[in-house]
Length: 316
Image (tube, rainbow, N blue to C red; front, side, top):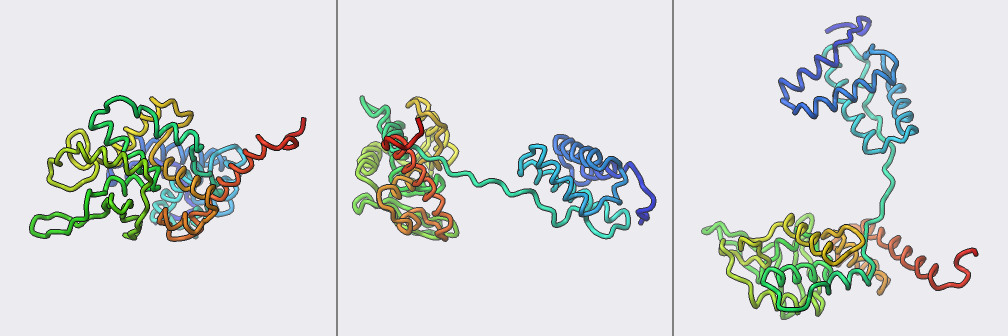
């Protein structure tokens, strides 16, 4: 092992070479690591890598942040530097990895995006006239159910028409979730394998009944509630694409994906009821902390109403 008193400028080249040959990382990834190390040398003003200390790395991190670099970008750089020094410690004597324990600045918490009530209703009622094809009825039922019950897209895609037992002989898995149209609810399996029962609103029940009346038999023999154009269980990605296209046709002012409908569901229920615990149960959150973000959305809604309605809300 070489002493740190013997500086070498080819450490980065050797490190990147090993990443390319031994770990077989892509040229794009190698180029990103090379830029990160070049930036570190520029910040240090030299390439005597073993001399950099924990204090230096913290100072460089603060400089990047002051220069407008995002926390995500800084975290990526720190990850690249940390990997380099983990490798360098095996080539030369170091008192420790100077990047270890240095963290990027915290990312500012962003509120989830939710549609206004008017926009949500407009989205649900768009293109509901005429004689829709089976695919359109399937889409309408999916979108209504996402907004009606606040499901995750994976929960929606995993729904069966009815509960099915697992069958080891056929390899069929037990239902992860199913529709009980008569009772007016769905049972879904959320994160951590936690099951919950969620009510389904009247418009969604109507849309589901219309879809079930024309739903073809699944080619794979499954009881999947929603099917793709190939008549097999629909995937979350297909749901995302169909909802995006539907929102564009409806002229929505923002990009709409399934989680926007989940956020809209939570925000609108909280605005009407004020019952945070109920929203937590409906969403399937293990902790109330995850649900509390919707109180901020609720306050934003109240503040907007105040600004529009109160004659002294804004200074003239």
